[in-house]
Length: 414
Image (cartoon, rainbow, N blue to C red):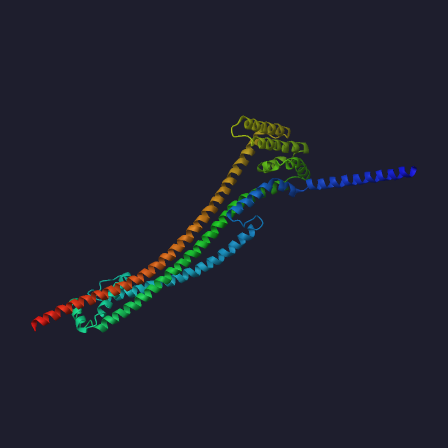
């Protein structure tokens, strides 16, 4: 019997020692947790971090707070490379534009100085195809005598304007039209490349601006919160973490985050009891505000809950020794900051949507330009060919008519 009692006493003593040791470890863990400045930072920044992640995803689904610095660094490198490409593309464009201008000038000089007005009065490069059509029409008259008559009919000397002369003019025009058309097309193609690179750079700048607008508001608050925590003593950090633990467990901390900087700044120099009252003021406000949100706008129940939120906050702020007027001013300042941050966030989201719309419009516009350019080229070529054929047919008809008339006259004389 004595042995059992001895064993039992030893077991009880062992359990007591184990329980005491466990309690000590639990207390040490709690003290370590409440002394953690990073924990205090997370208490007032977790909701902002979640909103930052949401805002970045609204710009691009792949953007996160963890990779956004890497994204911006990549944008800087990409933009630098594109700016280098753009500079080279513009230099090439200048050379192509100069070449197009030179070939156009040469073509118009030929039209003005070499092709008689009696053959064609075209002076603009765009009308060179008509002049070539007139010449080809004359060359289509196979009978030299009839060609000479047509030359005379146009008021020119057939001894000067011969078939060989016309062929020389036609060859020169054909070559110069080809040179100018190719140079002009190359310059326009290069312009498309320049525009495309410029659009890419603008798109990157828009993305950088949107990201900067979203992150700057977060970074500003994060820096303010971190600075305020650094200004707290170890005792104040411990008291704040411990007093905020209840609000965290009840899901109220998210509603208190917009007042985080005010709480941290007011806590400086306070005793533990004052800090408990301070955090309790905002916890009570959050609790009754959360209850008020369950009721409809302008309902009596909602107004009652909001009234209780204000009353409880005022009561506990008084216990904390906080001047109510100062608290109201700080709240108004926080509301203004949050409104500005919300407006910036909304603007960034709208900008992201507008950027996507503009990108889609730009792609459609580029596709339309390319299609129109190809169609214009094809139409110009077809028009030149058609004009030449038509002029040749008409000249042949006129020559045939004139030959028939001359034949009839000669037959009548005979």
